[in-house]
Image (tube, rainbow, N blue to C red; front, side, top):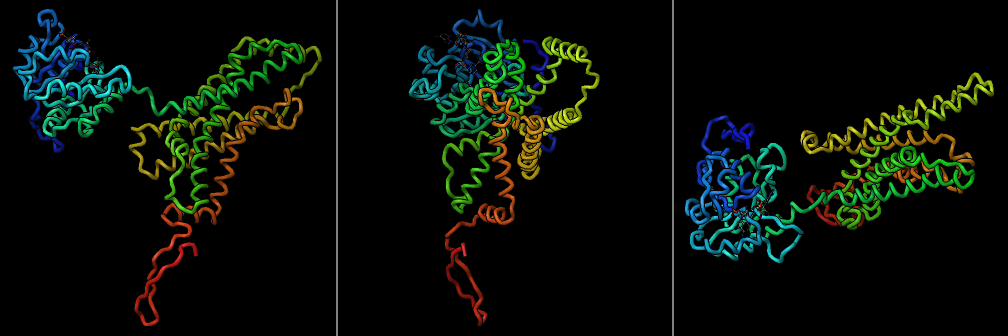
Length: 488
Ligand code: NAP
C-alpha cells in the first residue's frame, strides 16, 4: 500500500474553534487478530490515524511483509498481551480456534467486525457467538459495514458511518472514539441485541429500490409487448411487411417515454389517494393501508427511475436519424416524391406540432433533471423544508403537466384516426394518459377553495365528528365552558 492519501490522517484533530487538541484515543495500542484483507487495511488505517498497531497471526513471519513497517506483527498470544482493544478480523467459523487465547483475552475489549454470507444466517449474531465463547471479554460489534476497500481508500470515499453496539457503555465509547479518530462517524445502535441487524446491513442489495425497479420492469414489459404488437406484429400479419428491424430502437424508444410518463404520475398518485382518504374520513390520524404507506415511501425511487427512462428516451430519440433504416426510408420517400413530381411537401400543421412537441419534451426533461438532482441527499440537505417541497411537489407537478402536453402534441389527432387502431388497439399514448390525467384532475379538484380549505384544516389536526372543548365569555363577563362538534 503506497503512502499518498493514506499517509495523512483523515481528520486533523482540531476542535470546532480550531484549537489543536490531542485525540484521546490516538496513541493507544490496538490489536488486530488475523492478517487477511480486512486486517491489513485496518492496520494501515490505524497506523495512519496515529495508533500503535500490533497484529496477531498464526504465521507472523510469512505475513509481516504485508503490513506497514510501523505495525508489529507477532504471534496471536503475544499480540493480545500488548493491548486492551482487539479487532477480531477472522471469520466466524474460525472463532473457536481462538479459544486457546481465552486466558490472555480475559477482561479485554473484542471488536467483532465479521459479516455473514446470508441474511439471518445463524440463530445468534456473530458478535453474540463471540461473546458466548469469551464470557470474560467485553464484545463490541462494529466496523463490519466498512469494507477493506473503504479503509484503504480513506473515509472520504465510501460509507463513513460505523454502526456500533455493545452491552457495555464504556467499551462502546472507546470503540466509537477509535472510529472517530480514523475519520468515520460512529453511530450508536444500542445494546448487543442489535448486532444481528448490523450484520444484515452489508448483505442488503438496494432494499428501497426493489419495488420501484419491479414496477418499472413490469410497465416496460407491458408497454413493450403492446408496442411490438402494434408496430411489428400487425404489419407482418396484415400486410406481410417485415418491420422486425424496429425492435431494438423504435419499439424501445416508444416504450421508454410511456414508462417514464406513467412512473412520474405514480409519484403523485399516492399523494392524491392519501388526500382523498383524509377528506373521506375527515381526519389525518387514521393510518393509511400498508400498501399506500409503502408506495408513499418509494416515491423518490419511482421518480428517479422515471427520470432515468426519460433520459434514455432523449438519447434514443437523438440517435434515430443515425440509423441506416432511417436513411433508406428518407431516400425512398425523396425518390417517390421526385417521381410524382411533388415539389412542396411542407405541411404547416406537422411542422408546428413537431416544434412544440420537441420543445415541451426538452422542458419536461429539464424539470425532471432538477427533481432528480434535488433528491440527492447532499443537495436536499442544503434546502429548507419549503424549498424542498416547492421543487419536489410544485415543480414536480408542473413537470407532469408539461409531460402531458408533450404526449398530447405527440399524439395530436391520431386518437381519432381509425387507421391507428391496429387490431382494434388504441395508440399507446392514449393509454399512458389515463393515470397522469386522473392525477392532474384530482389536483385541480383539491385546489378548489372549498376542498383546499377542508384539507388544510384536516392537516392541522381538525377531525370530522370530533367533539372539542370550547370556552366562551358569558354575558356577565365570566367564562363558561362546554362541548361542541368541530363539524358544526
Ligand atoms: P481473510 O482475508 O480470509 O482473512 C482471514 C484471516 O483470519 C486470515 O488471514 C487468518 O490470518 C485469520 N485466521 C485466524 N484463524 C484462522 C483459521 N483457523 N483459519 C483461517 N484463517 C484464520 O478474510 P477478510 O476478508 O480479512 O475478513 C476477515 C473478517 O473481516 C471476516 O469476519 C469478514 O466478515 C470481516 N469483514 C471483511 C471485510 C472485507 O472487505 N474484506 C469487510 C467487513 C468485514 P492468519 O493466517 O494470519 O492467522
